[in-house]
Length: 218
Image (cartoon, rainbow, N blue to C red; front, top):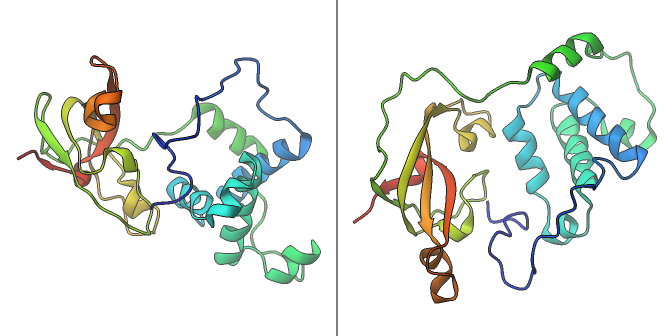
């Protein structure tokens, strides 16, 4: 979707300020917000793409006025309400209205899963539409739904750099419409294709894009 989160390449934002010593959490409530979000996710009522969309799908003023973990917690609240894990009264008061039929996840199981990690990769049973070296056009699609296509590369021509294999398609997965397995490619764009003559001649940008985002370049 064209939300306030999709800020790549926008003018006036200045350089990205990175600090290798920046702590993961700046306050204890941020650690708890992250933990609560993960714990709620283990109930299986939504997936990682649904939760991404819930964080991104905020009114622009709210999105830009919220810190990183405020967005995580607001999304967790919305998803818990939408899926019936909690009621509006319970959220407002912090007091449960009935005995929950959704027991908390087993901490040892959660820790084991988090240590192991997971992948959105699926068996390679879907044929690729493109191969390395193919020129492709990124479809210029505007949608209120979840998508992983940055605005700055829509309608632009790039070259397939490599095929990562078959992955869950986040656009359908975020909305409970299945995994729609398809290839995900690393697509190379020249800086000048994306940013015009102001970009340096030899600059390139690699963007991971799924089959459904692409069509053969004319």
